[in-house]
Length: 296
Image (cartoon, rainbow, N blue to C red; front, side):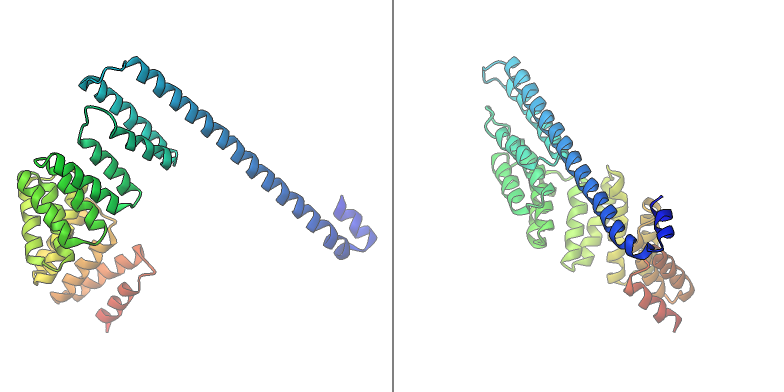
């Protein structure tokens, strides 16, 4: 109706110049109001959930009594860990951290709570604090390999690969049949340029057996990468094939398989790999330069 009326007046451009900004401003105001209302509703639900979590926790805590027994401590730790996990899901990280801190006050103390808090710090990218907690746990229970392994992971995230290897060494000494710290040490050795030692670790991890599905990819990809720097290009192709069986869309494995094939003189197959990788990662300049190099 407005447009028809404007046409009849013959003043469409001038009137639209006044009407459209007004209508757009109204729409924007409605959007802002809708966003504020949504935020208020979310905040109300969040506050209500926090109240429910607190009241539920207090009710269950009261049912446990006040006597400091090992059974009560275990149940209370489970309650705190459950609530801390919920707070993390809600991005209530301060509340979650308060619960992880509270674990340390439960008597008798279970040293593994240092590991629980350390992994929380890891998820928050607070790696130095994670190392501190893992090492505290290790001092309390020097025979528990999980603390040294956790410290190694945190140090790896910090780029302190030599220190990480030291912690993995201790974890392997304490748990020689566990393939996980062996695999992790191999990855740290790669970062230090110790490719032969890394390959030996990947071989050992495979011999010990892999418990987790993702480990299959990492052990073959890591060994294939080490193969390239050792000069075993045929072995690299085989390992990257195995890695891609575990994760068919992992572009890095395709690229390094192509590189190994290029080094073996298999230019056609190398080009196929590079072109496949480019389709998966079309903005990668290194892949484009590799394609140009093989074609030239």
